[in-house]
Length: 130
Image 1 (tube, helix red, strand yellow):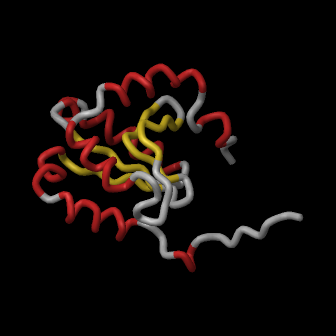
Image 2 (image 1 turned 180 degrees about the vertical axis):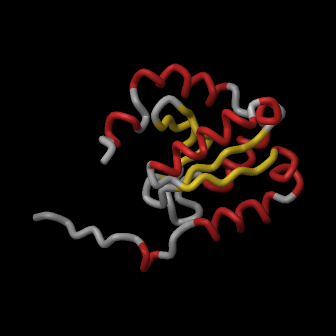
C-alpha cells in the first residue's frame, strides 16, 4: 500500500503548484468559482500534487481529480493517459473537461462532477475519538 502522506501535496512540488495557481486559465477560474468552499458538499483543492503530477482540482474525501484540458493537452495525450493510469492505481478517479465545454456549459460540467461524487451513505463513517 502507498504511503499517501508522502505523495499527496509533497513539498517538492510546492513552487510548481503555486505557479500553476497564479497562471490559472479562465476556464479553471470559472470552474473553481463553482466548486470552491464546499459548494457541492465536498472540499476541493486546486492545483494539488499527487506524486510527480499536479491535478487542477482534487477532492480527497471523494478521491476525485478534475482536469481542465486546454490546448497543451492536445499535444501531450500519451502523458495524460499515463498520468490517468497512475491516479487510477492509487484509487483516484479522474474526470476531464475541455476549456470550451466549461466556457459554454458550466452547469452541465457541475452536474457531471456531482454525478461523480459518492453519495453520503457510501462514504466511510468517521467516529470521533474521545
